Length: 352
Ligand code: ADP
Ligand code: MG
Image (cartoon, rainbow, N blue to C red; front, side):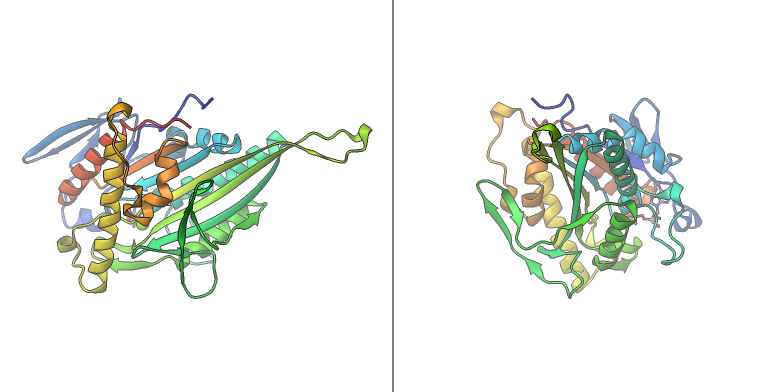
């Protein structure tokens, strides 16, 4: 039997106006009204959306971690469930910030602990839990990016090369030859995250100086081995039941309109690939949102992203979505589209 939660309704995070936006006089058109609603008010738009959790501009990273039920997700992964959290929204809306915090100033000056994102907080929680439960947990991580419809291994120190994405009856979609690195401490997993993120494909453009041009998926494999030690019988520590849980963090590349970001050449090829895979994801989500009886075939095969997310979207996983939006009047149409996207995702139900 599955746990009582399935796909959590999406959480919304509204970031503060950036210095640049404030300087050029952008207005804040997105407000949280408390009670889980977001209000968008601008000249010709006036709309209210309801969600389970809304984090307004003042919300701390800790408040987002605690309020988004992320802790529960970590516990479910330890219990053997396949859990995924993904951040989506326009480029520059705060996805990477929400997942990982602000970029470190330099290697010697990492971000302040209070600013650490959902990922680092989950790692800490996971390691803490594994200590307090006294369970014998084996943890390992893999880290991939999808860049221009190619899957690359971010833990591989060599030059980026594309890995094949395959399907098998027993495993579903999987990436061949991806590295998986064991870790036992917070420092070790934090280093892996740091190293992998530096290999990620980013480009500077008008909306965000460190814009991610790829979708990144960090997966933590949690293998809990319940030891049924019976020393009296001299069996050594035979393994009792073992559980294989997964905790996956997905930092989606931002949607964007090519016109607005001044993308051209290589950048516009990237943008088109990003937009196409986000469209495929949106399409799968809207089909999944239909009542079970009325569902048609779900086209996971339309993009690498949807193939890799098939398990978490398609019913056997527990998924938390965080939709990130900018409060600026200039981002109005993208913000509305993110909020509509998130509203559709609300209706998807899964059976973990
Ligand atoms: P995305 O990953 O969606 O493209 P980022 O996470 O890189 O966007 O955020 C864009 C900019 O806004 C960055 O400079 C980031 O530090 C800042 N930012 C985002 N969210 C917040 C927040 N909640 N509080 C303060 N600054 C934020
Ligand atoms: Mg980003």
